[in-house]
Length: 172
Image 1: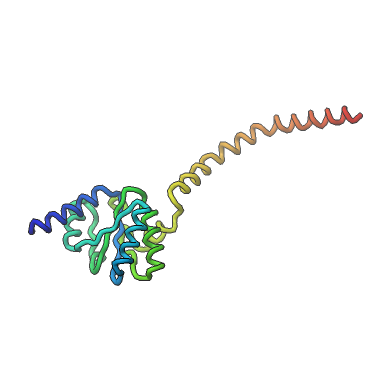
Image 2 (image 1 turned 30 degrees about the vertical axis):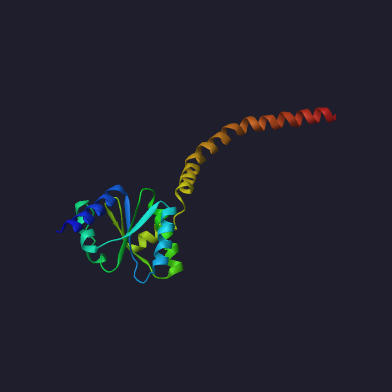
């Protein structure tokens, strides 16, 4: 392999190792302005997108220990990586795809697991990570809150009965 190609494959390999996920999209038909808009949206969500040379990307993915992408890695492919959560990047790509009506998910990887287009669409529909954490915390806190209300109820009833007796005595 020529030195330029080796350097490019090494760059792909380093990006794959630095990111917990990757999302491959078909960027066919996108103008430079549209691709720049996609890059801006992904940067806001903590991701970055790069056009890749398929044969070199396949070599880098194999070296990184990722599964074989098979026939999914063909055509004009751009790969999104990032250091934050995959859901935000998938959401940015999906929203862009709806507006541009040109790009679409090809496949993705989360850790070492291969993700198909349907799974990526489901990830894109998830709420942001902070919202998910809040929902989880609410779910975990619900039994404790119910237990606290249950334990406080007899004392609260006694206080209401005593208050009612005091009000009766005052009225008499």
